[in-house]
Length: 449
Image (cartoon, rainbow, N blue to C red; front, side, top):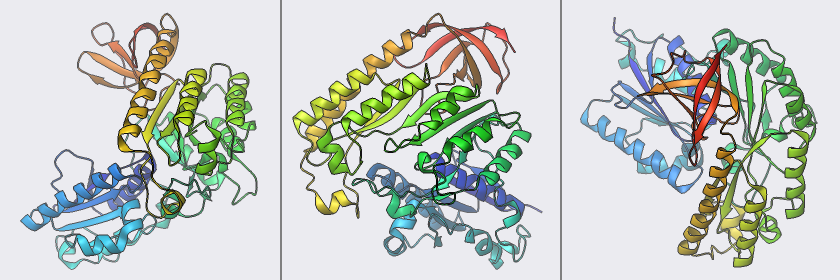
């Protein structure tokens, strides 16, 4: 008998992706056929996992819901469900404004989807689901990996106890909640047994990990224990916070070959005036000292950061200081965005958004032009070096891979001419870098492991 197909569409960050992967595992255990992020969703049921972080992300989520709502009105879609950050934050408004959606779920109550679907008599009549099926706690941490099978994201906590003046994440996700180390070890062992070699460790604020359940910063202990699990080839750290950074983590990075010399740490700004208004609880001097410490303790570390321009009260002098900071720091990876006011944040309630859109755009463009030059110079320094590369996919005439300094989807890649060699996806190779452009590298395999 034909099984009901559920299409899941994931928008926003990799933390949302982990939730979707857990939901897929539950749905498949309940007897559904599940697709994820297909170009043309054609299932009887659609579930949108939304993002509510900034304006563009909200708009993307709403547009996707409306698009699927049209399908439902036309009769090709039986049920439409919405979950995630957008509906966690704007549940009442969405229920009123988009009646085409059958049910809305927040960031954490999406587990109810399983029982809601299984109690639907119309769907049960097709024999596609198990009557009375609920969220199965015995497979709560199981996931159907939607990334290439050799890497996965590992979410170590939810929520955030920081209260940065511009950020709505604590409003959406609540207080920081760490997962026990033992649970994370079990999940990694399970994923390794299924062929996963590379783990992107993610959290809203990973350096806060452990304070709520162990009463101490435990990220260094966690990474040390995960690095000792057989089969873990790469661990990569995302979304650190500079204030009270646990420097013992740097020792762990230095000691373990399989902990990538890579750190994603959002600094946001460098001018004391702006940092204070942002409630970042760190100074320009302390930020520079932290960067110097990282590079001294972990030789060769590559730092990814995110910066913001146009925060309320940012003067020309503040921005010029940020420019000089970027020139000094020479970040290996850097993204930037213009401030946008978010409902309910301290900034929205207490500051006037006094930097014009034109000035924000000009500052953003200038900052990114500087970073583009730095990125090109950083990449050029890698020409002639031999680097360990994992192969993600083949596109046209090239195999596409990454070094330990490159996280999936957000960082540069290594392109290898497929006409010269036959490679296996998900395997590691030693690659000599032969040329570089502003972002990507080109290389040739010199040794097959």
